[in-house]
Structures are given as structure tokens and as C-alpha cells.
Amino acid sequence: MSGGVFGSVVSARLSAFTSRKSINFPATITTVSLLAVLAGCATNPVTGDRELNLISTHEQIAIGEQNYVPTQQSQGGQYKVDAELTRYVNEVGQRVAAYAPIDLPYEFVVLNNSVPNAWALPGGKMAINRGLLYELETEAELAAVLGHEAVHAAARHGAQSMERGMLLQGALMATTIAASNSDYAGYIVGGAQVGAQLISQQYGRDAERESDLYGTRYMAQAGYDPQAAVSLQETFVRLSEGRQAGWLDGLFASHPPSQERVANNRQLVAQLRSEGFTNGEQGRERYQQMTQTLRETKPAYDAFDEAQRLASEGQLDEAEAQVDEAIRMFSREARFYGLKGNIALNRRDYGEAIDLYNSAIARDDGYYEYYLGRGLAYNERGNDRQARADLQASNDLLPTALASNELGGLALAANDRSAAKSYFEQAASAPGQIGQNAQQAYYRLEIQDNPGSAVQGGVYVDDQGRVILRLRNASPVNLSQVTVQMQGILNGEAVSQPATIQNLAAGQTQDFNTGVQLAADGSQQLTNAQVIVQQAVVAN
Image: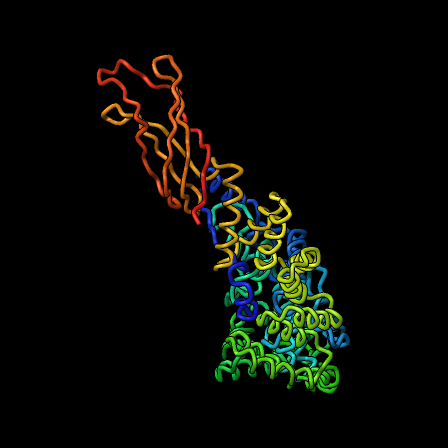
């Protein structure tokens, strides 16, 4: 999905925010973390080294399982028009991963994405884009890629990145990570952000060296010619030097190639040859046969990629012509119809958009974008029931600010304030205009229900004996009016003084003279003073 396709359809309604709360951890928390570091060491199952281990194998598996589907969704979803290809890739991956020294629930899928990339989540959940499969020539090269990713999982490289994040924060807590390096960065919310960050991170040289070293060894043990690991890296170096489009955004961003890696792989292959690994398979003919459909349909996907680019730039007529050409060449691909539905949605042709999303869902009923687009179209046509069902189905596959914001509006229209606040709060975790709108909507409801959540108040007496209210807007939104009541005991008698302050900006502190004056001789005392926040209004 490109942000530009949906962006101008309902610009006033489809939006989200970045609200970061600063947390200051006490020194005792840091001490606990350091003690945990000292206690949380274990042997790395791949390297045999003693290292920090704050995330257990069980937790790694849970992280992978929880993030696998949303992360696939955020990268284009599974490539479903050729189920045999995914079966084949998984078989090759399982054949190599069988030689990893830790038993994880390894799984390999092919993603419907033209960017050449492959990634691994903690716990053994891995994916390879069809865009990378185009660049490989043999099954042994595929085994080299999948073996490399299997080592990232088995050697805890993703878990180590998370652990470093924990230590940098000074406490043992899950980090909230914004999606980066993705067309979806402005839309993904909730836990799905974690997976997006994990697959876009750049591994260090040591992690890449370990993955090359042990991944190549595993593929040799699985019966493949390890020389493929050398030819693969040589190809990657040539492509990186040529700066071919797409590569710098894909595999090279997280797995940068280098002549050093080529030299290290050559050295390793020589060692493996000396150990007797001399008759390994290349599997060229088998690989070419299994990827035949993929290669034959590449022109259609090239047209689709161009259509996506044009649509994101607002060139809808040109984009539609390209996607029509893609459909003419290969009518089975659901994403072609989904993109055409996005174009119709952008043109506010909601009936046509719904028909096109129906065509996409008939071909692939497991991709979030079709339900998101159809839900937006139904919402614009006033079909609340169907809109709610589709938007929720979309969020179940991949939580996005777009869907959450719309669901919040639908819940508010149904007078379900609690559900509305929950949806708006989730949408408000995304950057951009969508988040800002959701933030405003959330705090408008929250402050109406609990004005004291936004305004902090205190009472003090200045050097002239005047009783002063000090009010602070602790929320991230501007307030147009704040009404409070100062209460206290003055010389044994209860006193109460109302006050109203106009235009209290986010984070701003203002003082307000209550008009209560204490005697200069100190004969009067004000005790038990407190501020009761009665009302706060969010500025438009």
C-alpha cells in the first residue's frame, strides 16, 4: 500500500499522531536491570559464546508468532498465486534449518513484494520476497539466503537487538518501536510496529559474519554446494555497486554486502572442501522449474509496481493504465484489483471501488488492504454495519491508524464512547495528520469524561499574601477553557473560590489570582488547599 493512494480520499477524517511520554526511571530500576544483566547470561546455541540473555527461547517464539502475520501483511502479504513455490521454498528452508543447533518452529513464506529482501523474526519465523527470488539462479543460492536468515533466528540476533533497546532504556520493558523503512510507516499501530522495526534493522558486522559462517555450514551439511554462498555475495556486491533500484531499500539496507564478506565466504568454502563437502548440489534446473511462473509473470508485476508509483504521485489515469496492463497480462493476482480499487476510492467512485475490492478478496481473502479500502468505501456510502465489519477485519490482520480512526468515528456515532476512545487512542500512536486528528478526538472525549486527567492544579501564597492558583495543561492538546474550584480552610472556616482560565496551551502553566488575600501580619492561615478541576474544553 502506498500512503498516497488512500491519502486524499478522506483527508479530514483519515489521520493519526505521535505522542511520546517521557519516562524518568528511578535509580533503583537501573540497579535492578544491572543485576538482571549479571544473572541473565547463557550460552548462545549457535556460537557457544556466553552472552546476555534477557529474552528466553520461549519468549522469542512468542514474539515471532505474534508478529509473523502482521509483519507479512505490512510487506505485501503472502504470494498466493503459486502455492507450490511457497511449499518449495519452505522445504528448502527446513532442509537447511534442520542443521541449526536449536529446535525452533522454523517457517518460511514467500511475500508478494518486488523489493529484493528476506528477513527473520525471533523464534524462527522467516520470509523471502518474490523480488529476491527473481535474482537467484539456483536452489543452492536459495539455501544460502534461507540458511543465513535461519542463523539470525537461531543465534538470537533479533532478540539481542531488543535486549540492547531494553538496556538503553535502563529497565526491563518491551520497547515501543515505530515502523521505519516501509511504505506503511505512517499507518501501522500497536504491536505490529515491533515486527516492522525488527525486520528493518541493520545487523552489525558480527551478526552478519556469524550468519554467513554458520548458514553456509548448515547448507553444506544439508547437501548443497557451499560455493553458492560465494556466488550469491558476489552478485550482491555487483548489484550494490550498480545501485539498482529497490536493492538499497531491501536486502542491502539490513544485510549490506561487501568484498570482505565475499572473501570470508571463499575462505569458509575452502575449509568446508577440506572437510569433505565436495559434491554438493547446485539445483539449477529444479530452481528454474519451480520459479517458472514467477519469472513468466514478472512483466505484469513490473507494470503493477509502476502503477503503484504513479498512484502515489497522484497520476491516477496513468496508474490505472498500468494496472490494467498488469491485469491483462496476469488476471489471477489479487493485488492488481486491490490497487485499482484504491484508485477508484481516491476518485470517490465508491461503488466501483467496492466491486474491485470484491474481486481482490475473491482471489485472496487474507490481505488487510482490501478490507480497509472496502470499509472506507462503505463508510462513505453510509453503510455503517458493513464498514465496521470490514475495518475490523482489516485491523485484525494489520492494525492501522486508518482503520482505527474510522472505527472510532463509527463507535462515537453509535454513542459507544468507551470503544471510540479505545480506537482513537490506538490511531493516535501513528505519526502525521491522521494521528493528530485521532489525538484530538481521543482527548476531546477523555477530557469531557475526566477533566482532571488533563489539568494539574496547585495553590500557593505569594509574598504579598495573595492566594494564587497554578494550573498546568498536562495534555498534548490546547484547551480553550478550564474551569476549576479552589477549596481550603481559612482560619478554621471552609472557603471556596471558582476560577476560569481561557486558552491554556498544551504543556503551558498559568497562574491565576483567586482574589483571596491573607493578612500581612500573618494572622491568617490557609490550610488543606486543593484545586478541583470541573471542566476543560479542547480547542478546535
